[in-house]
Image (tube, rainbow, N blue to C red):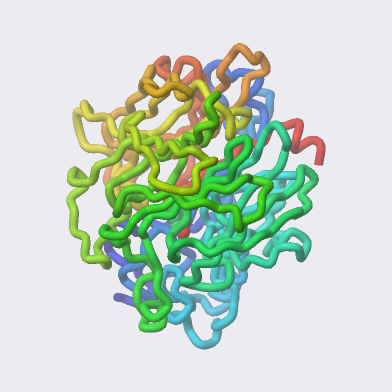
Length: 494
Ligand code: V55
Ligand code: FE
């Protein structure tokens, strides 16, 4: 690799080309009819490597975290700001003027001078709870950032209360109780099967941290809660300490290995976990929800694939597939939480896709509707090549009847060729009879290495109608991972 050059791979070219620019754009015009409820800030996590990686096979998940904020000001304008999360890793590399940390989640490939330095990149989800904004990444502890200035405050361990070395980027907040539920896997170091399950009170106090052993060390990217249970899926994307020590990849996908769903009472003891067996070889990054029906059966709704969606994980595992060879579907696993384990009952309840979104108040509850991103099978032209899979989703879907055995797709919003979605956030409506709003950024390619970015506001009750309001963001943006909506009154209360 030429010194100072990014690898010429899909993870660093085109829409994925590093930008590395802090942005401060004030007074952008909101076009259209902005609903008064859309008053607050849309935070997004964006990986963007500050320096060319030490290894040619690096990919978007290693990028240094940047946090962006789109603030709807309530006067027909919006502000767009974006800053680097100043992690210990970012600071060390800035001081050296080059990459010092090696492969994705392999500390044994780091330069000697940074051995022992926190190597997380805080690039996956901006988590808002108890008036704190945390930039989370599943391989380490989160970084706390100032929600107004986006300045980095520092690594966050709940005031010294957290023992786990990691905190997931996919937390669940029970809107009824205000509690934050999260876990950390590889809780005591790379390739460990230890998982820390944690509960945080509405005031931000970590009140419970219990450790358990997963069936094996797996990429546990997301989990769910229901009213009475915590549900931990384990899919066979696995790690191995000897492989890491030999300088190998953190993850291999193992198609012949079983998947598992661990279920425990959410306020119970981890010794109560029961493990239900799922199909071999499958994988999901994101769950839509979990909920209990009137008979006490537990339903776990996930965007499931027949293998790991990322080629940079499949290929080092010896799995060579074309995208069309990968099966996916919104899939329900049903278990009886009072049974002593057994197997999950699987049913297909929706189309292939990812980035499921539900209103915050439906978290863990029987829920009537949800949204997800998918590919438009009727697209007349090329999609947008972007993100860790290489292609952006180009259709937003609404599903209704989620609390029935047969949910239905009831709305679709396809994009034009060479345009792609970033994950929406849901903004609640003031009127409980309305479904609220979805806010997201649409990326479009408008020429060789030329891109256009807009934030769209869509009526969640009528996505087919398209954007009711838009904000053009006149700067180049790299694809986001996840986002979070914070209403203005919560920022005003700080
Ligand atoms: C994902 C993203 C990550 C990661 C592991 O989208 C999984 C899935 C942005 O970082 O480290
Ligand atoms: Fe995720």
